[in-house]
Length: 132
Image 1 (cartoon, one colour):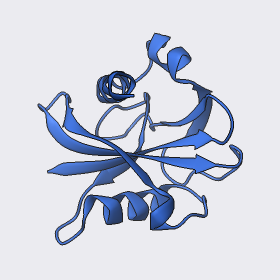
Image 2: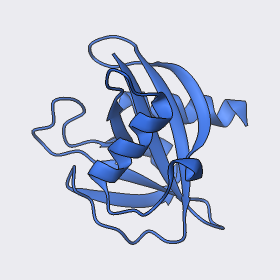
Image 3: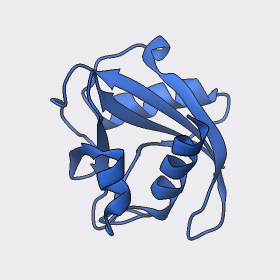
């Protein structure tokens, strides 16, 4: 299994948008994490990122708007999962969430200081910071 994950970032700001998982989610229940999910058979990571973000939010974008940022193994409770991370610059954090309970907007630093975030999301954001 491999994942495509997306972090929307509000244009001209340091604000990142994270998804709050439902309490009954199969992984990272109740935690803040990243939008996205599994890459299906025959999909590229970019196609999966586009599909997942369209399924999970009302954001309007094209595949070309997704910017590849990082490819790495992400720790999970079931072991490492190969992940592809994309960012999407959005004009403002105003959209609907169709998966999870809500979204929260904060700086990357504020996110990393929280205790209610997924281990995998923390890992990828730290790696992202190191590659900039």
